Structures are given as C-alpha cells and as structure tokens.
Image 1 (cartoon, rainbow, N blue to C red):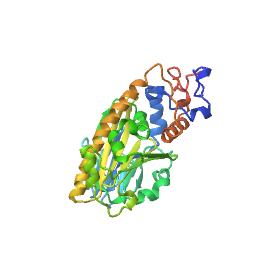
Image 2: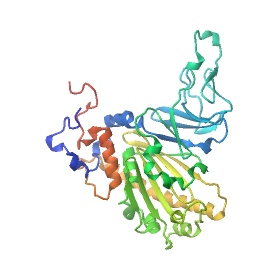
Image 3: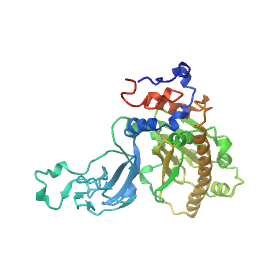
Image 4: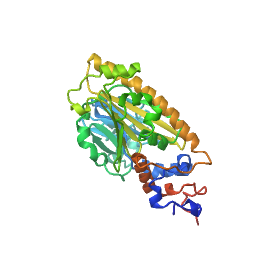
Length: 396
C-alpha cells in the first residue's frame, strides 16, 4: 500500500526532502501505527533481559515482560544461560514470578505442577497416564532466540534485524576496553512510566542540540565537548568531564573524587559515552558504572522506561562516592528530560505541526527517521491516512 494513500498531493514528500525532515507528528499518537510497530519493529528487535552475572548460580533467573510477552532467562544446572517464554506448555500459566529469583534445579508450574528442568525439558507431570500419547520431548519450554553480547543477554521473538554484534560492529573495539563481561548488578531493575510515545524518548536521547539549552549540569561538566555520530543501527554521543570545577556541589565533588580506573586508557578516564541501539535501547558508559535504559512501548502515548545499572567490583571510598554523585547528577538530567518529552508529546497533537526541519548536524535524528521510514513506509506521509489504513482490505 502506498504511504501517500488518502493524503493530498501536497503531502507527498520526496526522498530528497525527507532526509531533512523529522518524522511526522501523527505516528507519535496513532493507534494503527503503533500496532504496525509492534509487528514490524519490535517482534524482530533485540531486547535486553539482564547480564550473565545477574544469574550467577544455577537456578538463578531473571524475567522480562514486553508487549504482552513474558520471558525468563535462567542459568541451567550445566552453567549455560538460556531464555524461554515464561509460560507453561500445559495451560499457559506464568511459571516464575518477580523480576529475578532462584528456582533451584526445577521450574514447577504453580497451576498443575508440570515440572521442567532448567534447560527447558519437561521432566514430570501429575497423572501422566491421562495424557495419552504425550511426547515429553515436544512439550518442553518454548525457547527464544538469544544472543550474549559482552556478557549481556539479549532475546527477540522473530528473526529480521542483524545480530547485536553486527549492529554494534562500528564500536566493538571501543566497547571491549570497558571489560563489560566482568560487570555486576549495582541495584535492582527500576521501572519509570512516562505518558509519551516511545519514539519521543528515543529522539530526545540522541538529540545533541538540546544539551546546552536544557541541561545546564551537563554543560558545566562537558563545556563544548559534546559530540554525536550515527551509524546504520547504532548512535554514539559523548562528552569529556572537564577539570574546571563546576559550581554545583554534586558535579564539583564528582569531578574531584572520580578515581582512576586501572583498565581504562587515559582518553577514557573522564569520558561519558552514550550509545543508542535500534530501536529502543540506550546504554550510558561512565568510568564508574554502566547504565542500561529501554523504552518499552505500552500504547501510542505510554512508555515504560526500564533501567539497570552495573559496575565493576570496586570498594574504594572515592569510587563509591563517585557513583552516588553520578546518580545525583543524572537524576536531575532525568527530571529535565521528563519535562522536555512531555512538552513535545503535547505539541504532537497540535493542528499546526506535521513535520519539522532537521539540521545537517542532527545526524542521529536523521538516521532514526530514515530507519523508521524504511521499516514502515507509511511514516513517509506527513499527515495520517484515513482510519483503517492499516487493514489489508482498506482500499478494496
């Protein structure tokens, strides 16, 4: 179906023009477009569940809920990490509860006590003789496609996009310097609801132009050193923490107390670096810690931000203080960003706004818009087609 269906001739945007235009406002609030995203973007996208050190012992598990799907990643008795649908094969009951836990050597359904090994095999079921012809080998837990990348466990529900390693390929050498495989969890998973479209959060994360305007703390820390660049599947943003003391207490103490990290080269000792992986994963790498953030879509105007923080074991007082100060600094940045994205989401409903111009230096926003238009061609239409546009028989 043509992306220009039900739009006037003046709404058709050429391929050349759209390179310098933002995504249209209607796709930040349209229910039909949201359903397209569920099927054409998120089923094939890699989603972070946890780090292998979140599930260090056999029987340890971590769960992840996403768009109506429940996932469990568990370390087996053999030490291997595997990911499954967190659903019993008998009557679809959820098997394991909570964001994390320990199931021992078996996973037992709380409904009818079907019991699975930690490698997913169906081991036992009550009243076995009543299930005539049941092949236990065909009724083990449903496995998910999984990739372990620098110690982080990713899953997806259907094939489509390249592997995580392929998507992050431009920065593999850079990431290797941080020894990510050795990270351990710092705090529990946190969930923060936001009344905005997930793309609004993704845009804001990769927008370098708002840093000097809306984040005075980051401006005091970085000065004019903030940089941005875009690759086909991953964006990178960065800033060097200056030696010039900030007038803000948290920022100034962080600058003074941040200790050297033995495994990092000099160029990274005071580097804050941010990556955004298509479509909805961001990770912030600091000398003192690594934070992951996922923008989990709930509806066209609701998103759940899922955050996990990791650190290298380090009991130095200066490092503990630096991590606390990092949290204080970024808590304020989060407040500022929350206010910004709420303003934008409200503006997306204005009759006055369709698309906006993108500067040549807004490389990450241009890259994201290009990927969205390639994946869902209807995103090329500045105005929404008539209701029902996504139905197969709409134009019959």
